[in-house]
Length: 215
Image (cartoon, rainbow, N blue to C red):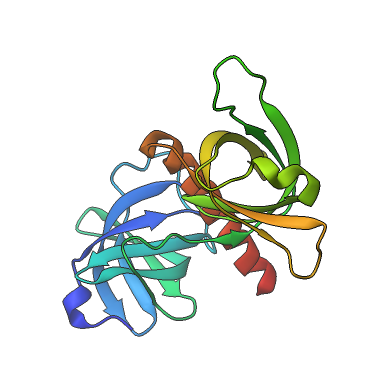
């Protein structure tokens, strides 16, 4: 749990749909955190009791994160405060670690030809898991010859009701040991922060959905 040194620590709050807000920890008591209501949160928008809130902050060797739920509102010296309860343990992540979640559904892959002017090769696959940096999918072995290391392609898939069309490159393609007719492909996105941010929010929302389902 948090120690007294965490009080007044600046943190990032992420809601159930992946929106991020700046805040700070005002006080700690057991598994309860007292958080400042984010200043950039519109006055007409407030979190309901029971809403999930991911609290995270950087440390020397990575990021510390805690999944919490909102259990109350307070006001103190004209400052709005949230009382949240930590659910489970705190998790430490390396700075380059990306949360990966299981994923189901189709993914459309379009191999970009090395020679300009040639048509794209369109291939259907099935998602296995994804993060804000990469995805893993399964395709038919007969469609795999073009998936050499560093091959470039476009990906098209959806998380819930949000669709993503992102460029990527092949990191590896391996024959599925359980099914010789299937190849598992790992792709790394070739995107900037403007495209990574909405994908990160979608991945986090899916992570919360899976946690709530398991609970």
